[in-house]
Length: 131
Ligand SMILES: [Zn+2]
Image 1 (cartoon, rainbow, N blue to C red):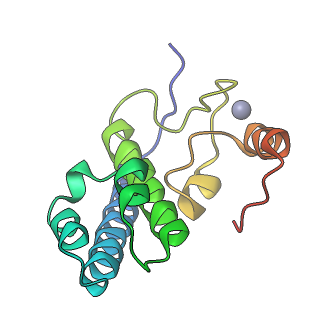
Image 2: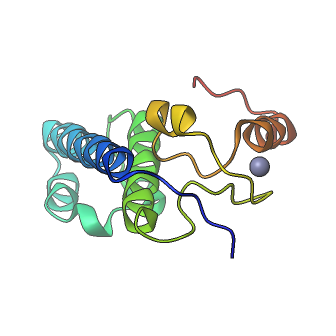
């Protein structure tokens, strides 16, 4: 199987970035849930390992659910990347199998696809995303 060879320093850099991002997202999500003052939301804040889009969608609150769902999705992607980081899958495009350049991963360590495949996917969905 094809795999991406990173230096130890590169892998450690990406790991630190992913861990920092996951921690920031967890804090952001928990703060937003707690700020709602709703018991279900506060309960979710204490169980972020179980949170997903459906749980967020079920909350009938004045929360910015779309923003929260975006954060939850990014948290899941970030955690997934952390799990893959030490496997041969990490840094290899999930679509075409090409190596994702370190520069792209450095900018977005949770990236699962090369730029070309990501652009094609976003074009196919034709749902404009902010990043
Ligand atoms: Zn690709």
